[in-house]
Structure formats: structure tokens, C-alpha cells
Image (cartoon, rainbow, N blue to C red; front, top):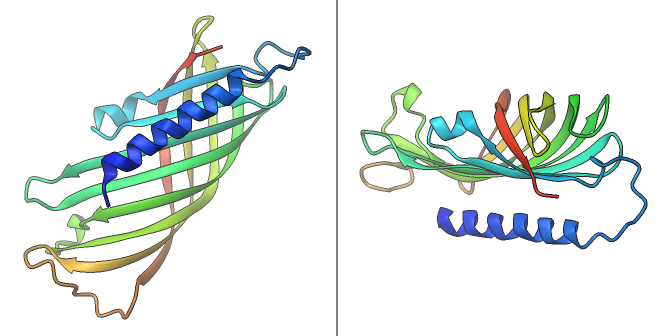
Length: 199
């Protein structure tokens, strides 16, 4: 799978969401933040060379919709793959007001990956796809008229479908007929997003 094409497609989707948000012609707005749209980047994942970008747009006085993606294109020093893409649409409910204070979110993500479980000491890698279903909690604070900070943590279940290969030969080594399957409960989202208001 070509990860650069996936990232390009995601950017096009995010731009499309922004264009559609701008085309909204509702005149009556209960709150200025209700129809706001923020573009966001995760400062912590950038430090790990795994960019995470997203858009969050207002749905109502207390509700927003966010879509974000995090990706890794790297290999470790010994050539083991650490490549993945996770695209996460999420509904968020703010206790106080959209884009302000404490919120809870629910999401369902799509994942694709090619990675080596280096912590297990194997000389193989796994390639496949999966999905996550879970919750996020966080706090968003306004820093200026256009800039917010969003601190969040989330987790849930990850269900994966994959094939195992030998790193040296590229031959399949897992013995499964089609796909191996695995499921885990774990934290898989988190960070500090800097959010810039677009409208």
C-alpha cells in the first residue's frame, strides 16, 4: 500500500470538509463557536516524527465533529517497518460549550499497518488492516481569538486482520489460510493538539 497516496487522499477529504463547512449559509447562530472550524496538529506526535493532523467543526452549542489522521512512514535502525495510518472520525460533546473546557468523544477508526513487533524479538513483520472503537476524554482551552490548545487521551478496542512475513525473505510465515485476527483493549490516542480557527 502506498502511504503517501493515503495521506494525500486524507488531506483532500479534510479540505473538502472545510469547503463544505464554508458553504453553510445558516444565518441564525446561537453561539459564535457553534459553526467554527479549527485545523489542528498534535505537537507530541510531531516530536515522535508521526504527524497527526485534523479538522474539528461545530455542530451545535455543545457538539462538534472531528476527523484526524496519524501516520508513520518510518523503519527502525535494523530495517524493521513501523508504518501505519489511522483515520479517526469522532463525535465530541462539550460540557460547557463547543471548543471550551471538558469533553467526551466517541469514535470508530480505520487502520492500515506494516510493522514489526520489535519488542517481542522477532525477525518478522505483520501487514494488514483493522478498526478501533472507543472513547476520548479531553480539555480544550482558548489561548487567543484564533488559537486553542486541546489535551486529550483515548482508547478502546483494536481489531486487526493481518498476515505475517519474514523480514529477510518476504515469505509468509504465520501459517494462516487468509488473515490472522487479533483484538486488544488499549490506550491508542493522546497528545496536545494546537488548534487554529479558520472561520
